[in-house]
Image 1: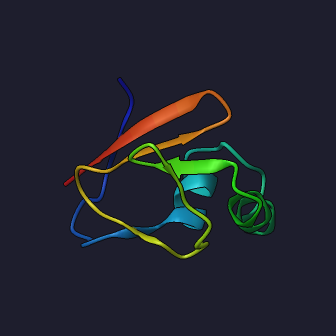
Image 2 (image 1 turned 30 degrees about the vertical axis):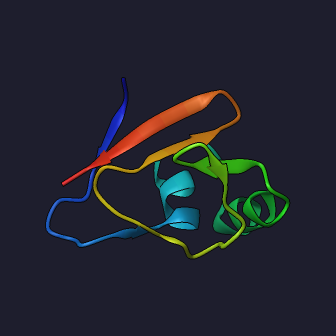
Length: 70
């Protein structure tokens, strides 16, 4: 299972996570796809582009899945 480490940060914005993982080519694309309902957080559709993703949450998009860790 893939993981994303927050390091010393308390959270990561959902749109930034998609970009950092290389799932999208830009933040603008990430924001558009999130707004259109293509991304889930913990199994539920999330449409807030800057939703704060914290340790323990699972994000899924386009067949990709990642769990956020501290």
